[in-house]
Image 1 (tube, rainbow, N blue to C red):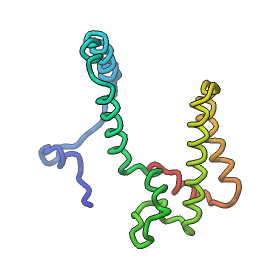
Image 2 (cartoon, rainbow, N blue to C red; image 1 turned 180 degrees about the vertical axis):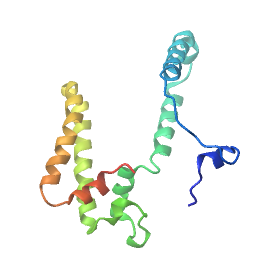
Image 3 (cartoon, rainbow, N blue to C red; image 1 turned 45 degrees about the horizontal axis):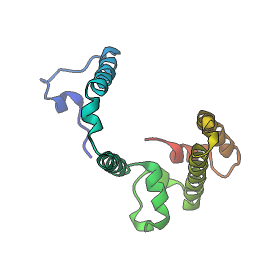
Length: 157
């Protein structure tokens, strides 16, 4: 892939560069205010949308967003032909059984969290999310994975 610099991508004149970024909170606040106003003002209109349409919309949105999701890709590595492995950092971890073990632990954690969310104990959800990082640290101490391997497996980029 070719790296495109921002001035070239934006079509800015030669010699022009981006010198900084001023952050402000007004835009995101106004977006949320407009969402709130539209929910209140358009409630009768929104109530007319069938639930099947909304469920289909969210299902489609979720399905299309799975492409490029590292966790989803690692789940499918079990049945992927070794010659067709993606060129991603987690595929560099050898042996591949370490990748499968890491993914299996994450699948189990996901199932446990989902199971608890469906029970009366669902109020502890934030605690479970907070415990994921200590779990990662404990897994690093087992010695099965090196620090570099964990970074490759658990990296977002």
